[in-house]
Image (cartoon, rainbow, N blue to C red):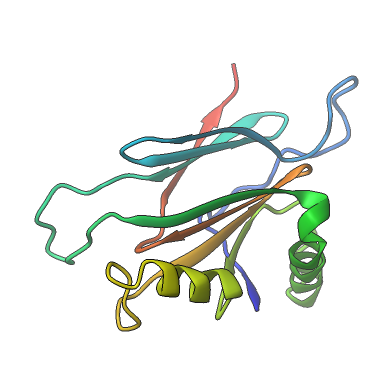
Length: 155
């Protein structure tokens, strides 16, 4: 089941159909996974920096900073997620079509991750399934925490 998620309160996406010659939709700008995972989305005016940074050890919350799965799929192959997300926006009265941030609950990807990396992700450990929807891609992340999401104005 998909759930609406808003990590950037009091912000409106810059998808306005007022930029001639520009593709007016949320797009995937980059995905970089090395020691940490960094995803960048963009619209007409902003970059959305999604950072799964590893915290300094030890943390009081006990966070380990693990990303267990990263799956990037062309949007037409995950139409089930895109249509469920659109329905969730309608149910919540959200007018911003193209909203990119969602969470999945009890997903098959989460079940797979728990089975595949059970030694690191046992059933009792909290994990999150984040979904980032763009015009061309669906990016899914299974991690032990929410990412830090910041906005940067394009110059």
